[in-house]
Length: 209
Length: 325
Image 1 (cartoon, rainbow over the protein chains, first blue to last red):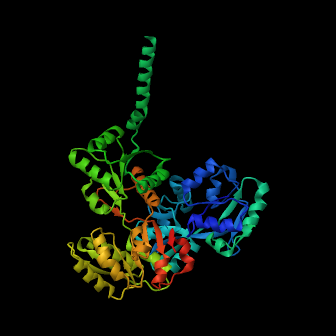
Image 2: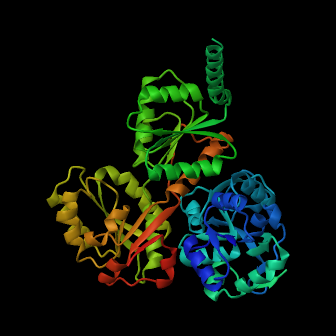
Image 3: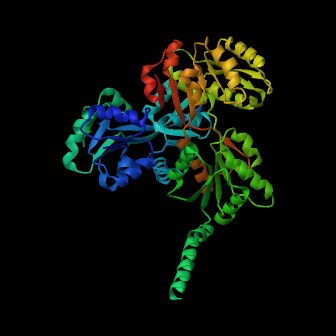
C-alpha cells in the first residue's frame, strides 16, 4: 500500500504507525509528490491511501473503495485564510494563494483554479507545517486549507488569522485498490488504526463505498 | 582503404550526432541552466528544482567543481543560451558575479540564487537576480520550540554584530506577529573574548525565555565557543536555538534545538519562483528581492533538554526530523 497524505509527522513515522496495525501489508509512506508518482509508475501498488484527486490521477485506481469519515461526514469544508482581514472572494483573479502541493506544479495550478473558479497565482509548499509561513512572510494573500486545519493553526499560532468561507467541500482521505477482491483486506487494516493515527489522517473511522 | 573511409564516416556521424543535443538546446528558448556547487546538500536542492520543473522545462545542470573557471561559465552560457540561470551555493554565485563584471556589455537572463550563506549580500552585485535566504528566520525556529516545550517562549535573546542589524530588525518584526519579543544585544563588528563575554552575560540576565544563536562565523569561532558561549550557557536552563546541527552535539553541551533549511524543499520553493519567471508571471526582478526559506529540518537534543530540566511535550516529538536521546 502506498500512502501519500502529508501530515504533521514525518513519513517514516507515519509508516511505523500504519505498519504497527497492519503488519500483513507492506506500507510505504511518501512525503514528496514526485517520489510517490515515480514509484507508483515503476512498481504499481495494490492500494493507494491518499486524497481523491491524487487517486483519480492514476488510471488503475479511479474509484476509492474505502472512505475516511470524521464526525459522520465523508468530506470537509475548505476556506481561504488571510491575515487581519477577510479576502474578497468575488475578486480572486491574480490573487496569490498558498496551497499544500499534492499533484505537482501544473496539475495543482489547474486543480485550484478550477476549485476557486479564478485565475489565481499559486505558491506551493511540500509540508503541512510550512503553509502558515507563506502568510507570516507575506508571500501570499491567503492560504487554501480545510476548516479543520484552520482551527488547528488558530490554536497553535498567534497570527491574526481570518477565515473566509468558500462553500467548497472535498472528500476526506480515501483508499483505492486495483483489485476489488482485496478491498476487505485493506478495509480490515484501516479499521485497526488507532485514534491517534486516524487523527493524523484527519478521520475518526472508515466505511466501504 | 575501405576500412579507413568507413572509420572516417563513423567518426563524422558520431561528431554530428554528439552535436545534436547542443544544437537543439541552443535553439530552445526555454532552457534553464543550473550551476550548482558540488556536494550532497546542493545536489538535494537541485533535485527539488528538477523534480518540480523537469516535466515542464528543459533543465541542464553543471556541477561547479574547484577547477571550473570563468571561461567555462562563459562557454556554458554561450552554448546553452539559457532563459534563466539558477545559482546553487556560494561558489557559483561568486563565479557568475565575476562573469557579469567581466562582460558588462552583455544582457543577462534572470537568475535565482539559492543555498548560499547571506545570499542577500551576495546578490546585490548580480544584475537581474533574486534569491532565497539560507538562514532560517527566528520566527520559524521559535514557533517550533514554543510548541515543543512546556514553558513560555515569549522573550527571546539574541546577540549579534552590528552588520546584522537590519536582519535582526526584520526578524523581530516577524516574531512580533507571533507574540514573541526578540531581545537583541548589539555588539561592534570588531569583537574580542572580553567584549562577547560581557555582552552575553548582560543578555542572559535580561529575563529571557530562550536564546536564539545567529549563524555568524566570527561570533561562533572555536575560541569564542570554548571561552565564552559554552561556559556561560551551562547555567542557562532554557532552550538554546541554533542554526547549525553540529552545535547541538551532546559533547559540546551547548545548543538544545537546531533548525536548518530543508534542502529539497528549498529547491521546490526556488522552482516556484523559477516557474513564475518562466511563465512570465513575476515582475520583481531587478529589485534583487530576497525571500525567506519556508521549510526546515528540526533536531532536538532531548538529553540536554532533560539535563537542563526543560520539560518537553512528548506528543510533539514525532514532528521532529532528528532526536538525540
